Length: 181
Image 1: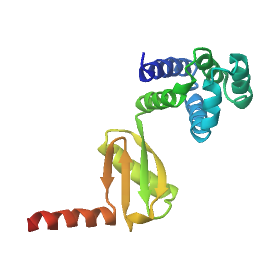
Image 2 (image 1 turned 90 degrees about the vertical axis):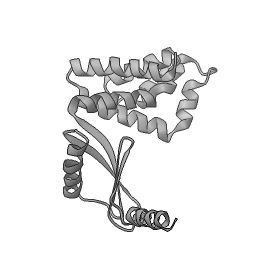
Image 3 (image 1 turned 60 degrees about the vertical axis):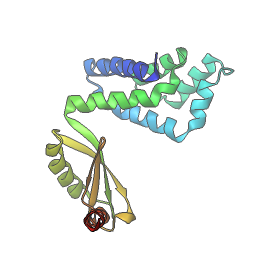
Image 4 (image 1 turned 180 degrees about the vertical axis):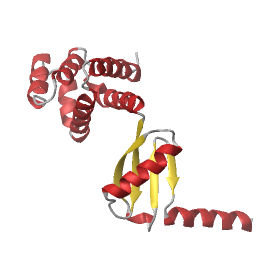
């Protein structure tokens, strides 16, 4: 069975459990922390996947590393270690977050700007673009990109809305080249 299918199944099971126990937001935030830890420390994943490291040692490592997290998240990680599926953690978290977003009517988006945006600007962008994609709100991550010159570039899923100065200049250049031919 492919990792994608397995990750979706674990995410769906944990999502259902979180929903039943009214801990959806808590578990989602904890899973994002777990994903960040695994993404930042590939060595941890290598140790947890290594066949010569005993499962008891791996479980102990999980319990110590994530002791402050809820029992549901820790138990899921322990189950993944037991079943030799710890390598799907990042995919599982992604699917869990997607399910939570669908339930709440939100979407994750990245906004690229020349300078950091304040909360008011972020909420304004969220409100205006959420309507365009049929969501209640957007959860924005602001990334500073000096190459934009000015304006805003927004990525929601696989859609890109480019209102940056550099994007406009590129479009003008393409038009000029196309008209010359």
